[in-house]
Structures are given as C-alpha cells and as structure tokens.
Length: 129
Image (cartoon, rainbow, N blue to C red; front, side, top):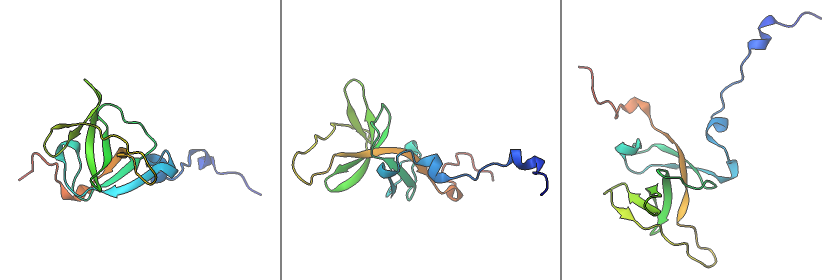
C-alpha cells in the first residue's frame, strides 16, 4: 500500500489565467488595441480584457461604441459624469442610450486588464547604453 508523500501538503495548483483575469465569463470579452495610449499603459496590439457586467468608477477605462467603432475613453465622475477623449484630453458627454430594437449600449464594458508584449520595451525611460 505505501505511505503518502510528506511533500503532498506543499503541492500547489497550476496558475490559470482564466481564474486570474475573468470574473464573469459570460460577460468577458477580449479585444486588441488599435493604437497606443502611453499614459494609460496601452500599446498598439495590446490585449484588452473587458467586462461588460461592471459599472465604471472614477478613472475607469471604458470601451464605448461610437459611430460604429469601439473607442477607449476614460470615465470621470466629478464634477458630473463625463468621458475623457484619450487622443486630445477633451471632455465628452456620455452618449445617451438609444431606444429601440437591436440598438447597442454606448458603453460596451470596462477594461479590467491590459496585456502588453513586454519584449518591445516601449516603456523604458532610461535605456542602458
């Protein structure tokens, strides 16, 4: 029969990125960034993890459906709720929800994680020569 291994108490489970990054599987989407937003830590081609079931809080990055395209905007709650355009830093009103059959919500979801390719070294402020 044999004795159990004394090391069996120290066995750890494998890391699952699904468990780490996805809280609501039926409301989670993945998208690729089409542009770089250095201040937000987003590089061109970054993998964005979006949860459409979350409500934004002050400072959240959102995916908004505008003019048939998805755009990244920053949500600000003060002095009154508005969006910040990341390209020019200007305030924008939050688009009103359209009523009717088949229309989509203007705010698609909240970006929960940003996954960049670290091999690019784009954030290196002090390169070693």
